[in-house]
Length: 464
Image (cartoon, rainbow, N blue to C red; front, side, top):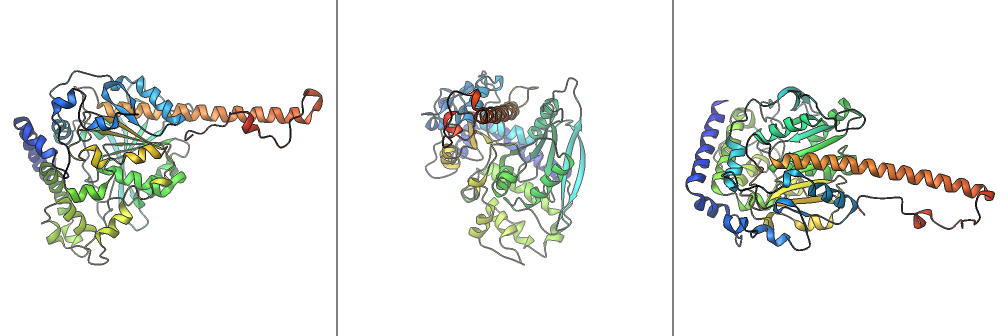
């Protein structure tokens, strides 16, 4: 581990110790995101009360106190049936890991362990910049399942958080996906996780241009394999921006976001509770400190490394540039992950927790109208889980990982069934057309103006 990584781990470990010694203080800090935010105690949440109750009326209840919030559709019914059968959502007795701050800090602080075997590729972009792709190649478990009926493993594109920290949960998801028959690959932005910064240009919060080139390359390498995508935390802004800009040309079959930051501008402006704000800001500064001399021609590095908030850091790095300065409003016009959300044509499952101490209360940072109106977006809301935590007792993986892979399996089965129904519809239409041509085979002539789709309901759509 590099020296700055050890310093960050020591800092976050101290925060975890603070969470153990003073949970009431941290609960009070976690409730301080916006004026009017309700900070309920964990005892109320354990009894069924808490922030998630406002989503309870008219929503579909699931095991473990979870709820699925979405627009009614054929795909929603299929997903609901799959989640009701899921063993990952079964209620379990609360343990010392149930607190939101412990769930969050254990996710970011605990060592990643041996992890999977990775094969790194550097992809040179159109502007000569570099991004990294870490292909998970091992360890290959025995009895590995196959996710595709054709025998080709589906590719799982994993996008870490926007700070570039590769967490234990991301690696745990890759190992579980490899066991379930997927071919995982981790996308690293410019200058993140050992990827060299060869040009003085970083990837903005919601700019999907680099991801587009990476997906094109992955598609070139595996043209016949289905492609699924998962993002973690603040990295969801990149995935949602990509899905919105590309629409039906995204090459992605299904996507999932773990604890996504959806209202990003309000999130930056409100600020995080001070332990997380300082921790993420320290990680950002340490990661960019090695490129200070290369960046000084484009940004004010003195002001950058003296930033006292994530908003000030982001604004200095991308808005107050020396070559092309822009306003804060203009920056979010181009980087809001929901700016083109109506163009998204891929099912997206968002797994969120009502006690998320980083994103804040769901009534402030979850746009529930999106899930009620858009048939492609589904929200799985749980009472507990923290931010990107959703941990269980070791050695079990985070339950969010199992739910996401079960969701991808349900998508695959649903689309396969839809294709069968469409094939049956074409076959019956062809058969009826033949009967119309041969009058001696039918007793009643069908009117030319009649519409087969009005008589038979074979044609289906998962957004109906």
